[in-house]
Image 1 (cartoon, rainbow, N blue to C red):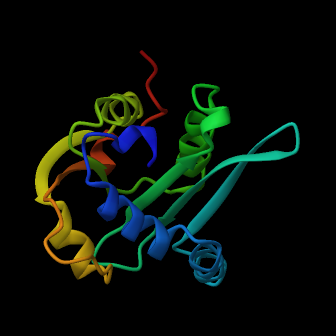
Image 2 (cartoon, one colour; image 1 turned 90 degrees about the vertical axis):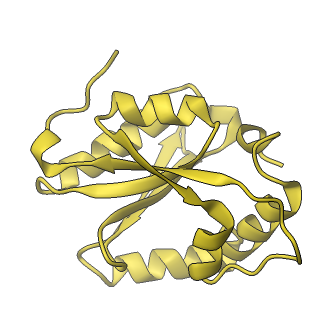
Length: 161
């Protein structure tokens, strides 16, 4: 189980989401959809020629969403996430978007706050992922998601603290 979810999300839930959305075929499909749509971005961060992480943003749903930033554990805290968010912001015209963070993942919340996002709401995680098409084993342990938003009125260069 990824360390950022330990104690926050049941291992079977993490496994279900990872298997259905982070497997190579699912990521390849995501890249293909992003390539074919001007409102979507899939960015890859490299360090010394090695893929260190990626970012997925699109406006396929009701509103633009930063779906995920994934950083290989070997490259965490080396500026890859910041570089990806800054690259995304350079590509976007002033816009608003949202993202979801597992409640209790305080490091991620602080990271996004440094980049101008604010906490806006709390959602039921199981309900959200089921609505997005993820299947879970019976009776998954509930967890919550923090809705964070980047507003057009707040548009500026990423803030550093």
